[in-house]
Structure formats: structure tokens, C-alpha cells
Image 1 (cartoon, rainbow, N blue to C red):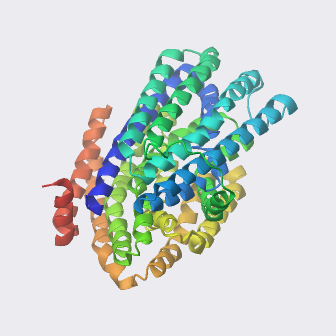
Image 2: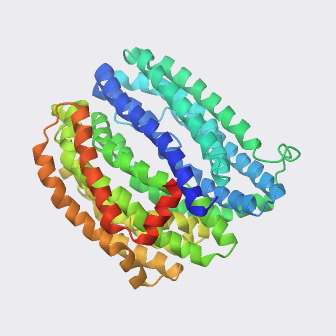
Image 3: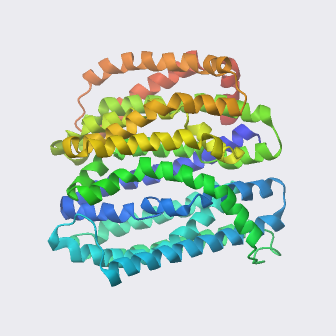
Length: 501
């Protein structure tokens, strides 16, 4: 299978998984908001913040990216003896991290009684009890990261995403039938933990089957391997810290310094930007392993092409979605959760503007992991995260939620150009070559906005079907424009080969 087809196939699989996650995310919010109210829904949101997909991603310490890189390397070399060693040593590190965080939080919340969140007094006991049950899941959450790294490294996206989709469906059914009032929260967490443990068990079974049968349970703990994993992971950790600041500090700031109801509002305004971030991450999901394979074989030409073509294709897919989302954000929020939240649309649009800058660096920053260039580009990410935090905290008392979205968007605007130029220099890509690739794409976005504005004024959707037709019409017009006028002949041929037209 060609590189393009492999990337396309795995991206489609990840996209299906994302679609299930999107539907779940959108359906759950009005259900819980209507049944529990803003404050209890804020507590539910707080629980999600404290997960490996949220605040606890900080404690991954960059290990997932490092494990994916090394496992992909040895899979490419067909060296399954080393593959097995890195697999078991990686799981050992994850188990240690998970158990350590469980013990720290158990002692902090249960024994010492530290509870720094801004929770109404009548809900403090409920929140503490929910957290104390939920933290038993943490060791399994970190083990799941190890299994995800393993299956990603060998391109087993079908099995990985199938397990995740079944898990999401079970969780949704549990929420729909379990949650009737705040009193159901405790029982839900018990069931939720059980479902996650089952998910983790199936991920383990699929992961060990990747290796030859005689090596699957050849467990060994070797200090040099542990040292090598963290030798590379320490740079990824700093990169992870930057992502953590961009993605999760806003929710932590709200949890500590603002009424918990603001966490509910923030979850509403970030839903569409988070959706686009998820789509972007899906398009990046196969890049670390692919880049690692190409770097191991010293295929510099393919790496340059992947950066240039990949960045252009990502922009063609993501930016039109951003434009359409910004134009219909007020309509979407009114239909989704009600007119009383329509003022959040303005904040959502400001947050969406970040993608006009971040998509220059999104794919390239993922390639940096596979190529081992994380150290070289870290200063740009760190500077951007500092700008984000400074702006967010400086204006928090005056602007509230607006300061948080401004911090994110302004920081992306400041760093995108030097960051992009640095990555191009690492791959020895001339500026002119990159500019010639993307110039028609950038011009098409300007023209697309001009086309969409009158369409937006024509539509006043009264339901999601009409809103979907409006969005689909605008996106279809752009992708038709891209196919006819933006993509070059070589790109059109590559696209036809991928989809077998």
C-alpha cells in the first residue's frame, strides 16, 4: 500500500471514530444541562478535566509520543524483539505514573481534605465523593495510553477505533438511562469506571497480538530502555506542557477562580472549536509513525513532500470548516442549548480565529515528533504558551471568559510565522517552494468568505436539518472550487488514486 493510501485509510478510520465522539459530545450536553442544571453539569465537566484527555495529560510526560516513535521504528525494521521490550517497559512506566497519581489524589482529597475548587457548599460533599470513586480509574487510563501508542505505531487504527466507538456508545447509553438527577451521579461513576476497565482489557488483548506469539509475554524491565524512552520524552513533555496550557489551563482557571457555572458556559462556547481541533488531530493521527518510518530510512524527499503537501491539504480541509463554523456559530448555539446562551457565539468565533494561524504549524509540529526535532522547535511553543497565560490571567477580572479566548488566539497569531519558518529550515524547504504551494489556497479562502456571507444571510434555520443543509451547501461550494481551481494536476491525480476514481 502506498504512503498516501495508508495515511488516507487510517485517517478515514479515525474520522469515523471522531464522528461517533462528536455525536456523543453534542448529545450529552443538552441532556445533562437539562436534567442536572449548570452547577451539577459543571461538576461533570470538572470530572472530565481530570482525565488523561484533560489535566492528567500533563503527567503523560511525553511518553506516548516517545513510545509511538520507538515502536514505529522497530516495526518498520521488523525487529520485534526490541519492539516487545519497549512495549513492556512503556507499560511499566505508565502503570507507575497511574498508581502514583491515584495515591497522591487519594491522600490529598480523602486524608488531608484539600479541595480548592469553587463549588457551591451544598454540592461539595457530592463532588468529593464522585472524585474519590473516579480516581480509581487513573491507572487504567494511563495503561490505555500505552495501548493506544502501540496500536498507532503499527497502524492498527481499525481495532483501536472500534474499541473506542463501542466504549463511547456504552457510555452514552449509560448517561441517557442513568442520569435523571444529581443523586444518580455516584452510581454512574461506578458503572463508568467498570466500562473503562473493560475497554482497557480489550485494548491490551489487541496490542499483544501485534507481536509474534513467542515474544508476546516476554516481559523484561531494562533500565537503558526506560532511560532512552524518557531521554526522548523529556522534550515531548515540554511540548505536551505547551499543549496542556493551550487546551486545559482555561478550564483550570475557571475551576479555581470563577463560579463553577462558568465551566458549563465555557464547555458550550468551545464545543465547535474543539470539534475542529479534533478533526485536525485526526488528520495528524498517522503522521508520527509515518514520519518515524521515513526518518529511519532517510527518505528526505518524502519528508519534504509530506510537509508541503500535507500542510496544504490540511488547510484546504480545515479552514473552510472554520469559516463556515464562525458564520453559523450563533445559529448553532441557539438550536443546541437555547437562545439564553447565544451571547457565547461571539467568544466562540474569537476562539475559531486561532485556526487561521495554527494550521500553518499543525501538521509540521506533529512531524517534528517523528523526526526527532522536538527540541529545536520547543522555544516557539513555550513562548506562545507564556503569552497565552499572561493575557488570560491579566484580563480575567475585567473580561472574564473573553480574556481566556483572546489569550489563545493572540498567542497563535504571534508565533505561527517564526514557527513555520523554523520547521521549513529543518527540512530544508525553500520559502518560495512552500509559498507557491499554498498561495492559491490562501486566496481561495478570501473568495470563499465572500461567497458564504450572502448565503448566511439567506438562511435562518429553525432546526438542525436546515442548519446542516446550510453548512453542507457552503462547504460543497468550497470543495468544488478547490477541486476545479485550487489543486494542481498532480494533486488531483494523487487524490484519484487514493479514492480509486
